[in-house]
Length: 138
Length: 472
Image (cartoon, rainbow over all chains, first blue to last red; front, side, top):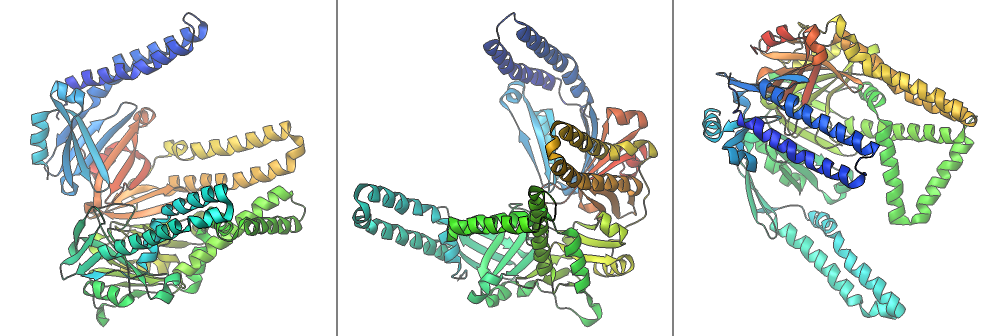
């Protein structure tokens, strides 16, 4: 069973921080600091942020794994819904790499496997590993 | 190189209709400034714009050419961006010929060819041609039918009537009527569409028979919508013939608009045997198939075997699709997951009853109308509950070494899907936190399709499924 690189967890956490900025900005803009609505919203924002940062994302990384068998590729993922996805190698139409700016910063990429009627994305692979895997797949 | 039917020029004209905004604006401003004479002075601009539209339409028609050969069909097109595509015949899954009623006086037919690639909304090749030209293109794709290999199925009028009766959708009919009224207003003037609506209101008031007029209006609108959908379906399937040859399946039919389809048998992705509550009670089944390019357009003949009794259905299904036989269930939902199936529909029924009670308490003067609407909403909710319960009782999966048989419900229909193993592109076992305790999961299967086609069987035991699909 292969695991994505640990750095992908850092990328997810960075994205979480970026996503948390607009709600924080809106709360401070629309509500008076120190008032009850402001306190409640800040508490909710903080709880949500800590939940995702400390619990959800690490669990998501822990559950993510994949294996390449001789006739298929299998991906394990999911927290609330545990998923096992299997795609026969013979149905793969094409394979590509998806590299975001944060991925490029950490030397990672996501492998996108496309079949007629389905698609699997495996994030957090080293660029070289993703290219080697893409070559192995039909 | 050959060209499309000249009627295509009219179709191209429709695509540049937006240019009429120029004479409209020009006329409006001219009339504002100088009245009729002001408008007339600038009429030469309107004439120029019309000539430009015609020129673009003709130029677009001239720029599209095609050339069929033994290996495929080459299509060249484009005004500014030039495109040259070669579609190989061995990649074409479905070829269809449409003979629309409106195009019959012009001797034009619509030829479509579709492959697994390209857009999933439109066919990869579409062209208006004369019947002779269309036949010349696809003649090499027609397989000759040897008498000893003859496998034909022509549904009876009764079967087609039953299909139209049981599957017609009021909503589709209502959309049809409302489009007709709004278009008639656009074409013939606002007064005509107001007259149509006024007449409908008077007739409804006359035929209310003690029902609140607003409720009667809704009921008659639904009934008329259903009647239009019924006639539409019947006319589409009348004169239907299905022929199975060694490598192709030929389907034809239609009363006003004739349609013909040639499908590569090896590229049929799955068979879908469908039943609603009414057809299940009457022991009837309908057969649909999935193949790229077939059943894509909303007015296609998407059903291969309209409603037939079990024995007759099985006989024709095995003759037309050998190797696609459903097998008995090997894995079925356990009793403990019954609420996984009926939970939402039970909640829906309860919510409707509660809403009706609250509204009657709040608005007692509207009691009869609220009760009527509540009843109308309860009917599909109860049907959904029954369908979901039947799904629980009959759902599951089996494998005979070559094909999987999936049994599940979707909307108000119960599906039995037979899909060869090599047409499955992705298998997903999905287990929620609640399902972890009972060691059950949902099975989601994607089959070969241009878009995304998902089959879902719920509440099956995880370990036997992992064994069946070899997911260790």
